[in-house]
Length: 425
Image (cartoon, rainbow, N blue to C red; front, side):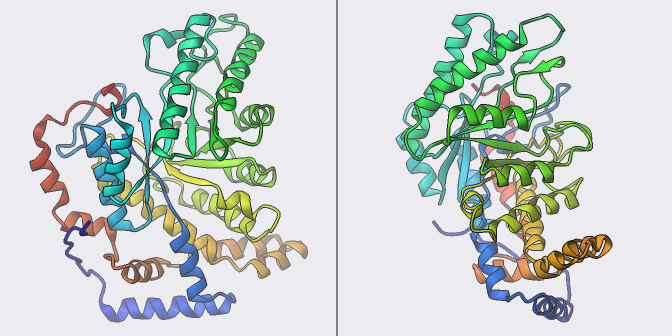
């Protein structure tokens, strides 16, 4: 497919950009890093975008429609393809069932390939059916539990049909009041269900088990934290791994430490990247806590250097999971991709030898300064160089805006794109 025509608007004088690039080369050299090696690492980074991020969504108060928002799975996949063409970094799109259910998954698979994509993680929906008021796989009623299991098994079949490796499972199961249900019984039901689902996976497939400390249940959540998710994965076997959603933690949680432990245990299967200020806000990745994002990716970059854990890092699924309620859909997604690339680039620039020396010497401030030095490095010239090398515009957000894509989609899709993606089922 031909790339859409883009108009690049240069807002920085060329001499300033060249000076920034030369400064960056000097910084890389001082850290014993080669430009080619860093660029190769950046090219290897693949980020999966979610189909549901391209449709209209909203708060529990209102949905504010974006005129060009995708209304069907075909339009959502097309938008994901556009993001990949503009960024060069997003070759797969996650799908959600039943929001993205179709009669012919082979046809959907072919359409994704036409857009330059593969279909990524398949996400079951176990929180919207009326039957799930008291839970899904943990529900007291065996018939409801059977319904929930069958739905996840359907998603395994869909993953098989579209060539997807991952089934990404998040449960809204829990209780709202003490005494509402037997907590140990709910844990047994959870294990029974996931054991059946895990046994249905083909070799090479994975069940990614996500956790969340509250919401929609408010007293107890059946998979409340990374420890519970890890315990479940250990019970299931090697094809089950933990999925970390960066918005699913209490305030003040040290997410990078959780990531470090899961990496050490070989149990980190993937991320749902987003950002939050208060709870599960689903904001643009890195928009609130860019340093936290950098520290998370620092753990991954460091772990990749160790032979015992390098394979775990190579298999991590870097996925975005966010909800665009007041901003546009596509350029907000691109901004998240750019922010992840930026944080990854900075993590790659950490002087690991200096850091290890400072840590070994007990130089607390010195070690901290090594990290801050990398975090404060301006990597925009590096990423612009990478994109130009790939035949892309240096600034993909600006390329989307200057390319007239939003206007084109508004005309093609009209003002009827008001239905929430969460209502399309």
